[in-house]
Length: 351
View 1 (cartoon, rainbow, N blue to C red):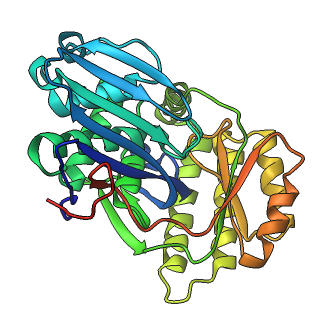
View 2: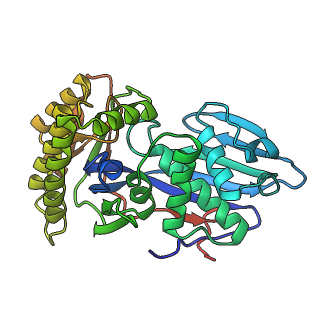
């Protein structure tokens, strides 16, 4: 993979990372090292980093939508002492990127995101990637190479915070585009196509769950050899391969792709048991309203689902869920960009 381009100015550096939807293949990254199909979405997390002269603390600020601030003595941050709230993700990524108290002292990190948080679109992976990239660029002039950034961000989430996240989230967000993510040794993010050729409607059910708890329960079922989980692994492998093939065509058949996406939702509902009545109701409604297919994304048990929607059905799809307790937004296309770094004021020069 090519190095991430970065730009550094005296004021600091700004890193931006998109979220992602998973079209098929949730959890197979940590189950079997298998493949998932993902698409970056044009909703991003942004992190700015700079140094405050004379400070002996790490300053963390999360803007929209969390609005939290933390000032951590550098020695405490370097020791890996956490508070148990959402700012732990920023602190963990900073510790992995800079390691010691001397490196952490005076660092100021400010984050904001367009993504729904804790909703299955990799908001935490995007945040950690943006932190490690921004700090790498701030200290060395260039953000880490893409695979290195993913490794560091995953280490922060799994090693520091113990969530159990696999490779898929990090590679999908960092690489951008529509990808076949394979969690082999080494992991790969093979480009299928730069962008989906139709709108995506993202629906947040506003039902939240603990990702770490959900993943722990799935791991226990997989390790116990539960037949339904093993059946999911077998069936989703064939489905993922078929979806990759459809999307790789010069003229993808998005109706066929949508049917495969809906089939992937059915597997998660019936075998993994991670859907909810609200997710299922939304999926059924949007397909009746003209979507080609719909599916939950991420760990399930709440959070988001998405629909692949032809241009002429976007309005009817949005209207179909308007009376439900959800937030729906139409995204014009998936996002071909992945992790990027630039000066805070948006200048175009690069290091």
